[in-house]
Length: 335
Image (cartoon, rainbow, N blue to C red; front, top):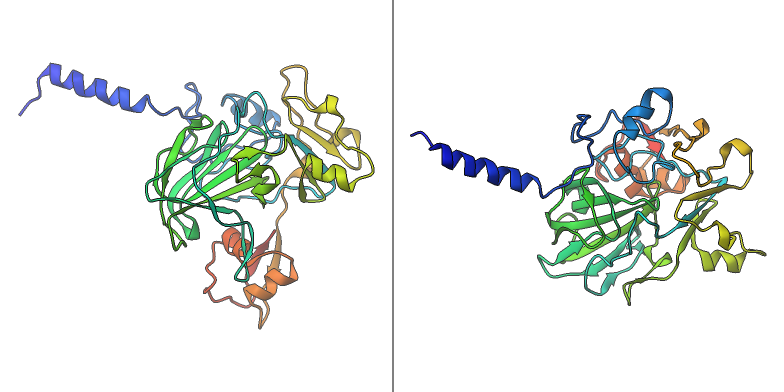
């Protein structure tokens, strides 16, 4: 049977309306696939026009690698000789929104000999989970290792937030979201024994204790500034207690992200710009992977202990399972 023209028109209008509900961060003049593997986030002459054609990709001052949608981590970018001073909120992040209701049922830290890299918040099946700040969805997929249903959002303050064990995902990779927007529903997917939200905070792919900046009792921020010094994470008030003088002049806390290099070479400091010129990216910040070559008798536990990392992190970046058999001569990527 042939559909009448009026019915076809109604169906077409409905399709247009449904697609209009999702804002994807892709410029209308540039076609970029759902997985943006070809997008290099640096500012050489070849890539500058491509990067700038996508409006407001968050925190491009820091992330010098490729924007990817497949994994929680794609590189190790933190430089331990650099102090990063990050205002928690700015004009683009919006105001912080606690991602859900509920009490903490498992904190950040070691748990049964494994590193638990986030805060678990008890939920009922199907409870709503929302974005903590404005940002762009970098990753959204079901069945991702022990995380199950997972959403990763990158924010303009340089942070990424992770929401895991979701039963349903309500956003797409590269979608722009606002603080408080629904991103999924709580569940028990992945390695979970009860319905809960696993919530992580990361900077340059490195996880840190969310309690550094968030009070999980009140659901409010407890610091306006995060400081990363020697690869460790501090709230502003914490680091001021362990240093002889304040390292954050109040006049320097603006809506822009500020990096202060402890060595202070002139060409490696990124300061807030007063014009529309893109920030310079230090070529020395490009990620150079390190590897461990498997020898007879090596185990993931021994490798993790030797290189001061975790089995979870080794498995994640090498796409391994803890039960996988290692082969002599095999290269294992290290943090």
